[in-house]
Amino acid sequence: MKQPCVYIMASRRNGTLYTGVTSNLPKRAFEHREGLVAGFSRKHACKLLVWYELHGSMIEAITREKQIKAGSRAKKLALIESHNPSWKDLYGDLI
Image 1: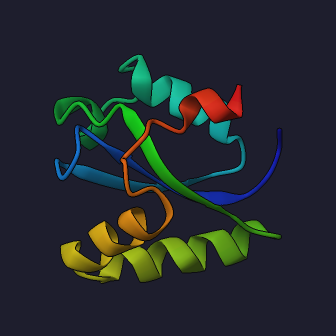
Image 2: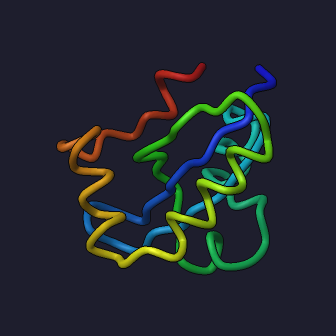
């Protein structure tokens, strides 16, 4: 699945959040889940895919990622809650 998208991983409900961009969400989410991505997400155990948004181009996805990252934590939580109020791990929907 080659589809530009922005995604948010979480350590748990209302836990640490990681926002990223990728063109292969199933692969990238798997890497986060297995701790294969060095850095912030592995250090903070962000293994749950709690939100994602598909885009038509990588430029659009990167622009949206920057917009989300520039926003407050409250805005990120509201974004997740509006689409995934139970904080279900969406990884299972991808595979």
